[in-house]
Image (tube, rainbow over all chains, first blue to last red):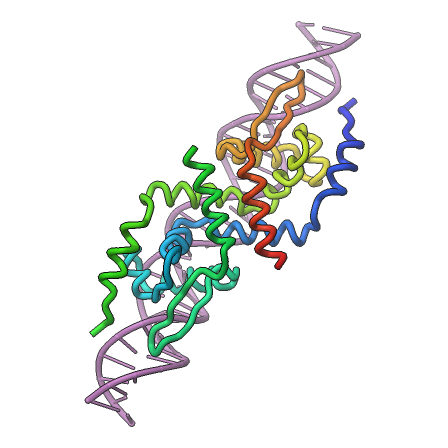
Length: 109
Length: 109
DNA sequence: TTAACATATGAATGATTGTTCATATGTTCA
DNA sequence: TGAACATATGAACAATCATTCATATGTTAA
């Protein structure tokens, strides 16, 4: 007969957050899971930048950057302000830096 | 004429890690970007578990879990030990907990 | 060694997603 | 108002990926 782990399962499942929250967590990290978006977040590490500056930096089209900024904004990872024709993007909060920082530590040790 | 940001770019690009490292960072977060894998990591939060217990917990096939454990192991996020027929998986280090913890904070505030 | 169990793996498929291209929206200045 | 600039957006395509199914590997006990 297959082995038994009722006890363990009872204990572990009691400590699991809701499916919805776990899904949201996965969706959040999915946003970090793309090199272009990582580069954008890294670029905004110190200071805000406009869209065309980011495109220049990453040598990618304005459209591609704009699409990715939309994804980042939907996840509340970046925020923006308009100044005339130009729109400046910045990191939305400190979590971005600490998440990237922890990831950095993990792969560089 | 389009506006100029040579100065900014010079400064920002000097602070950017290598493309290879940024790629690795994206690849790492890609592993976090799946609900099944998030659930597995959460389940292993407190204690090690065998493959079939995880499959029971998540109500998924043994094969699906095994495939995902392989991805997690390749990213050095989980480790395993054999005990007879059974193989127990556990979290590989503390970064997993802190990355998930930061993500959790971000979405719950 | 044979049966039962636990896990791993390769191929196939359906779904998701990043980029491109063309174009639309919004802003400034002459 | 019209031209130039900055950004956003929708559709389409190629590539990536999670799961399933069938089967292989490894372990134990009779």
